Length: 350
Ligand SMILES: [Zn+2]
Image (cartoon, rainbow, N blue to C red; front, side):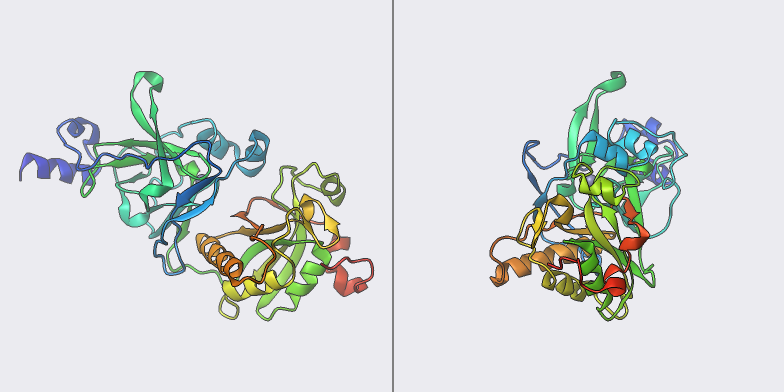
């Protein structure tokens, strides 16, 4: 066994990673692709329904106020991703996760790492030798704590993830040392019997009534999402200070209704080219929005929106907000199934 083989073997076994590191010459140095920090869009790769990477796509950057991040994240997630914190080693939920699947950004849902690039570094933090796509990571020089390190963050929402070191195993020689709290995980082949998504398309009374009629939809609830106020009420949302949209939580049976077909119903029930309004309902609470819950839903939604835009059926570009679902606050009981209870009277269906 050569020294290099020995070192690689011990690295893969998670032993001696720091002691052996200085003898290893990395096969690759990670250099994040150039991104303009002031740009409103960024080029990334998503993952399709078959787990395959898409071609590079230009998508809006996710920028939120500090208050909005506080509302969306747990304290631990916020401390790591927005305050450049580090979780205690061996304490994160994913450092010992050996399941096969996809790790995504906790802040925006962007695919970041796959389990087949994960290895046991022995450091106590989830470690990967390569990202899903180089496009999806950004890097900055970090000189804190008297060390020079390369910080790694999500290129779409700037969430701090961890650091990259040049002492990883083959084939890259890199070690992406990531905090569990910065990640979410979707296990391969584990499909729930029911999936959920949140849609905004104007007054939620009529939107809920329309979705309830779609075959394959198994349940609907109306509520508020996409804003910053916790436990928002209808009165709060109507103050126009919460940032929330009126949304319908749609639960559906993916064996009977594809997400693509559900999107066709969504596009057909409103004009997604109007901004901050729908029909006679004016204001951000009535905005067109898709709050996805899985990476596949995002990919399908963006492709569907692009097809619709190219079709020439709209008066302008699709204005629909497509972003990761955050907290959903169920609306008051009198708003639930309103149209079924009271008919169309008083409901301004777009
Ligand atoms: Zn992100």
